Amino acid sequence: MKITKTICLTAQEFPPDVGGVGVSAKRISLLLQDLGYQVHVAVFRSVFRKERKLAKAGEFRRSQCQTSEQDGIIVHRLYPAIRSTVARDQDYLMDIYGQLTTLHKQYQFDVVHAFFINETGFLTTMLAKENGLPAINSVRGADLHKHIFDCQQQKQIAWTLENSSWTTFVSRDLMHRAKLFTPAITYKSSAFLNSIAPVDFDNLPTPSLVNKLRGKVIGSVGNFRDKKGIEYLLDACQSLKTEFTLLFVGEFVAKEREYWEQELANSGLQDKIVITGKISRDEALAYLPYIDIFTIPSLNDGCPNALLEAMLAEKAIVGTNVDAIGEIIEDGMNGFLVNPYSSEELTIAIAKFINRPLLRQAFGKSAKQKVLQELNPAIEQNNWAKVYNHVLSVSTHPEVEIFAV
Image (cartoon, rainbow, N blue to C red; front, side, top):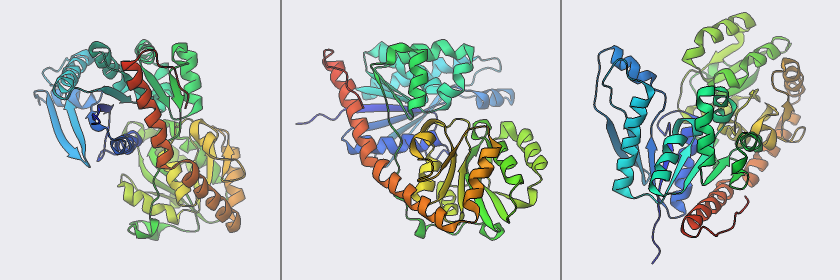
């Protein structure tokens, strides 16, 4: 009789939370569940702005673990105690770690798996080391693109990478950087792309702002912040002569609000810009059929789900040659690739699509074919099966050889 292995994924967000890491964590949880694993997800943050704000307002609480079930996945949302207005990060982290340890004692996990290494990786790997468990860490993007430049986090990131049983990456660029930073992972790491299931765009609701779209619709989807390169897209659109709408499906992050208000005002495009604000994933998907040219001008971006969704929707795509965007888009075949930070290259690529509907259609069909054939869930599931089979085999039989994905 086959014994079901119990795994615990850790992530800083999980649906209904909005965010790419949460979407990926849910997708991968379901893939692992389909492979026969009992899947738990522990959701917690390692940034405590909310807790400090509550403490200053005089709102204190005990630590909390809220457990629920989502599609057969057991979800534990962990919240640290708020006891003081002068609490430091280690006070909160110690509390979260205590809750993780309690979960392991209760459910006896066979393997733990952290998403987004600098938020959840350290605590997850420490739990694994103290309890003799294999630990998988998944680098998603900003953890090595942004947080690696924080001197206070570098040692923690390096320790986590060195002590991980296996590390996965969503792009070869990210894996290359990690190997330079921590050579020890060279023979215990692999890079493979996110996947996406087919979407029935015909049965999505009509989005609320469709009546504001005029001319060619140049669209971008996401949580718009520093890494998205939106200022270069604004510059690129200033020289377009045709009638168009610049559609932003999503919201600009609050901490950068003043900067983006300034950039939008200085662009001179206010009468051409439509911003949806924070909306559900279904409504965001519903806007894709109304977009003529999908742009993703990121400065760095891991493997963005928004790109895969646009490809499924048969959109003509202009993206930057960074991370998985540069690995997925074949320049001149299923989209155009430009260099990051280049408004001029963005302008040229967008202009190639503006008045050429047959070219947009041909590239869109090629993009959809690529995502259906090479980025489907069965391929990603097979990659995860190899990773899990390996780390579980090595934990039982240390002499097992390294494999390559």
